[in-house]
Length: 265
Image 1 (tube, rainbow, N blue to C red):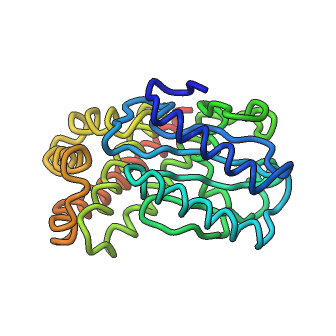
Image 2: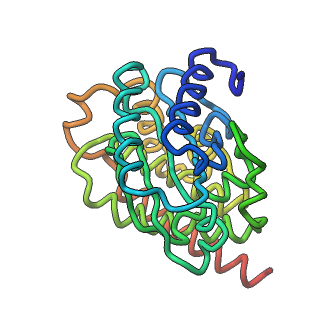
């Protein structure tokens, strides 16, 4: 089915849909397209394909093992998309109770093997995107699992992301993680300032005007992401210059903006 303008992307989505359904059977209640293919600015050469799979119940270990094997097989059969597919596996109950209860996710994502992790409200931005922009590959509307979000939900989640990035960016030793964090920081700042969600590229273009002192770092991150992402030599040369200072500035700006919004709101 043609979910995107790209024939090969549609074919891979169809393959993922059928293979996930084969492994999970009736446990799979919905599969949803998210990420840049729905928010805009998808770049066929570097962007990822992002999906969220909703399960009726917790996925048992044997099916997790089968999912891991399935993803490795698909990556081997489609090398151009190897390390460029993210699928988040979450239960229907988790989406309904994530504000008050911890839950387990299974995730395959670029740069990480298939794994499970404990999550909470720190994943709210993913569920916000699913509820507001997600396209059903199969299953009902995401509204069947998720209550509506407020703009304050988006803002608070973006502030949390900014703070998390400011901590993690200090630990990276390679260039590309810093690039990702700078662009994600641009989107967090955009979300808090304009109270709206947008693509990384649009957020970066906006942030260069909003934070001119950090425009060279943002421009460098955007250039690397678009033209030099797969250069392992430069990726391993060291962290992105200016990333730490930018992340700190985003935290300061977003915290101040939120305080002002709460005062005037």
